[in-house]
Length: 66
Image (cartoon, rainbow, N blue to C red; front, side, top):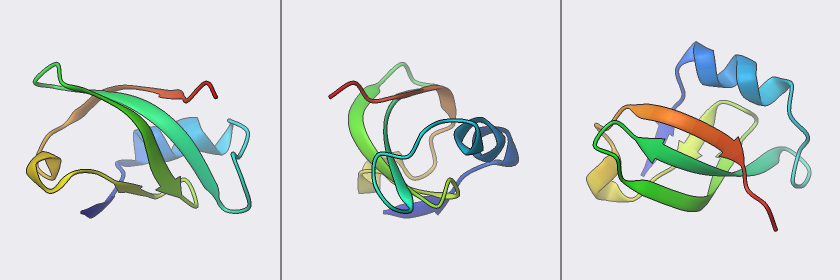
């Protein structure tokens, strides 16, 4: 499921290096403490999360280490 990131995370990602042209790979921790690794974010604005995470708030985000 693709969801639009809150402005807070867009500002964070704009200051981070891209993983490829127009995208970044990140690790996130959700409000329910679930951790998801190697998630794709497009143009620092849209994130691909599993369908069951669409309503969860992101608590922490960092660039994925390869």
